[in-house]
Length: 103
Image (cartoon, rainbow, N blue to C red; front, side, top):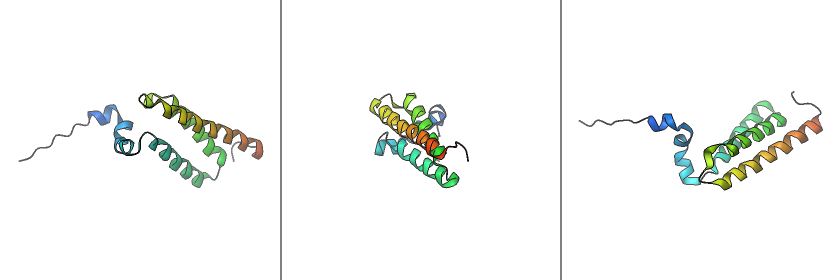
C-alpha cells in the first residue's frame, strides 16, 4: 500500500512564489510582467477605460518593484519601476486629454 504525504507548508508560507515556481524556473522573473500584461488587457476589455488600466499598471509596478520578491534579481525591480513609469505617464496623459478621471 502506497501512502503519499502532501506537505502544504511551503504553499502556505510562500503562496506567490510556490504557485509561479514552474514558470519562473522556465522563463525567469520576467514572467510576472506577462501576468500583469494579461491582467491589464482583461481590465481594459472589461472597462474600456485606459486611465483605470494605466493606474493599475502604475500601482502594480510600484508594488512589485518595491517588494522583496526580487532579492536575487535586483535588475527586475528596475524593470518594474520602468513599467510603473509607463503607467504613471499614461495615467496623467489620459487625465490631461480626457479631462476626467472616472467614467
